[in-house]
Image (cartoon, rainbow, N blue to C red):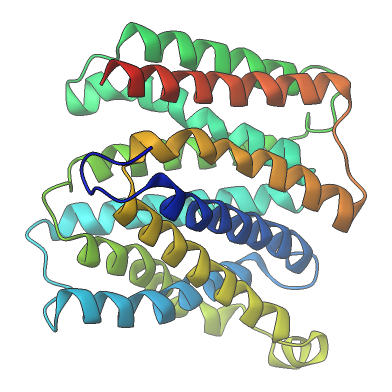
Length: 291
């Protein structure tokens, strides 16, 4: 199967996309481990600083010295701020919640996209998207049932992260005519700059040296590698071809949660996660067919 837009085989893009998902799930697992010993601000800063170190030379090489120029600076800044809020909310919730179930809750974002697409973009969601978002929401309700491991006040952080992620996606739609290199740069640099301003008030250097900075460096490497692989994959195949494989991240999160933290979903939680994944994969396959 090939991407009609680029002519490159999907098999060239899929390994990169799967590797990106593995890196980003490893990133979340590393963050869950680190927030036990480091402040949330330091952990998130390491993630964005590492991404910026990887993305900036790439954007400069591909886009030239003016890669950072944009005609929509306010939208770029606002979009990047929502991405930062999504990361803070998700990793803040990971301190208290199992990795697999927490990752699944963030897939509420497509439901929020459907709800907000009309008031923000004046786009009516298709019937297929309405059905898929409803089915996905049912899966989330199964996860949040009374007695589940994820029914904790910290789940509000995850819901907030999903909402911020939805707003990030909607604003991305308004930047389709912008250079991808500029968009990549602002996605990393805004979070790095904002968090750097707060570091002097939160970093305890003695504690940081005692627990070691190696895991923080690993965090930055995983973030940069994951976003680089994902960008390369999207350059080789269209989003409609790759989007069904996004839900592999639930499997990665389940595996890392079990291997690193001894956490595994019970049967009902597994059913809820399966419903969430099925709703997204089904919608992606339907929309690809209709195109």
